[in-house]
Image (tube, rainbow, N blue to C red; front, side):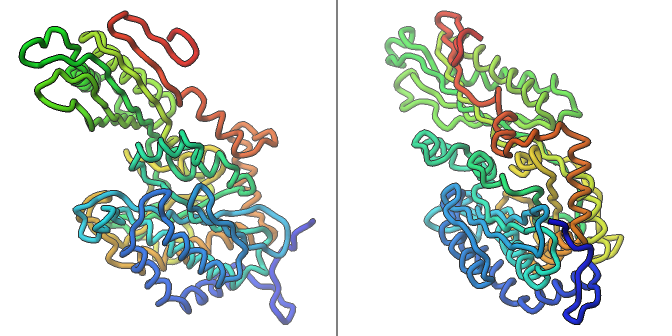
Length: 470
C-alpha cells in the first residue's frame, strides 16, 4: 500500500506536521489534571519488577478508555496496546516502565514490600499514557502504527526470586525488556522510545549512553568443622570469597578508563554461625562496561579472582553468569529529532548534550536490535536509587515528556512516514541487515557466550564448564 504524502483537513486541505503537533499537545493539555494525578498515584503505590499488578491494571484501564486493543500479562505483567494509523508503515513504540526499586528506608516506600519509586518510572508510565492521548487525536494522519508498551522489571532487583521464576519456566530472563524480546513482543516494532526522569539541572538531556551489565552469583563450597577444636579439618568458604573480593579489587587499575568498567560485589551469605568453619559463601557481583568486549574482559577477570580464592583454600566455586543489560547507545537520527523538538518546546538553552553514564538499562537490549531514543527529563530531586530521590514536579516529569514523545512520533509517521523510513534505512547502512529474522532471534545471538554455569574445584585444580574444559 502506498502511504499518502500528507494529512488532510476535514474540509479537504492539507494538515502540516506542525498543526498535528499542536492538536496532540492540546489533547494532552485537556487531560492535564488526570495525567498529573496518574503520576502521583503511581508514585504512591510502588511495585517491584514482574509483580506490578496494580500498575498494569491501571494502564489497562486507560487503554480501554482510549479504545486501544491491548494484550496483558506479557512477561507476567506487561501490557501492550496498538494504535493503527491510516496506512501501512513502520511501527513506533512508546514505552513506560512499570517497576520500582527495593528501598525500604525511602519515605514513600511501601511498608510491606519495601518498594519505592526512586527512579521515576511512575512518571514514565504517565508520559506514555499522555503520548497515547495526544496521538489518538491525530491518528488518522499517521502513516504507520504506534505501539504502547508498559514494560515490567527494568530494575535489577530480587534476583534470587527471579532466578526461581526462570528455572520454573515462567520467565526467560531476569529483566523485563529482555524477557519481552525473547518472547517476540517486539517482533512487530521497528523503533522505540521512552523518557526517563532525573534530578539533572537541564530541562532535557538527549543522546546519553549507558554501560552494559552482567550479574554473577558465585557460590563457594567448602567443608564445615568445629571452629575452635578442629578448624584444620575444615575448608573455609568465607575466606575463599574474601580472597576473591581482594583479587577483584586488585585488578581495578587494569581496566581502561574509556571502557568505564565498574565491578561491585556484596556477600549475602558468609556462613551460618561463627562457631563453625563456613562451608558455603555466596558472592553477588555486578560487572558493568561500555562495550561488549570490555564486559567480556571484566567477566574474565572476576572469574579468575573467584578461581584464585577457591584454589587458595581448596574450595569449590560455582559461577552462574547472566547478561543483565547490553550496552545502551541511542540512534543518532532519533537523538537529533528529539533535540529539535525539545528545543522547540523548551528553548535552545534547556537541551543538554548526552554523556556516557555508568548506570545500565535494558533499553540497551532493545537498542541492539532496533533504533531507540531515551532522553532524560527534569522534574526530580536527589540522586536516583537513593532515599532522597523523588519526583517533585510532575509537569516536567510526566506531562512535558508526553508532548515531546507525541511530537517525535508525529514527525516520524506523518507525511508518508518518510522520517521513519530514513531512520530505518540509515540503521541498515550502519549495521548488519537483519536478514528478515525476528528481533527475538537476533537478540538471542547477541546474548550468546555470556549466560551459563561454570564450576571450579580448587581442591583438584580443574575447571569444568557446561561444555567441557575451560
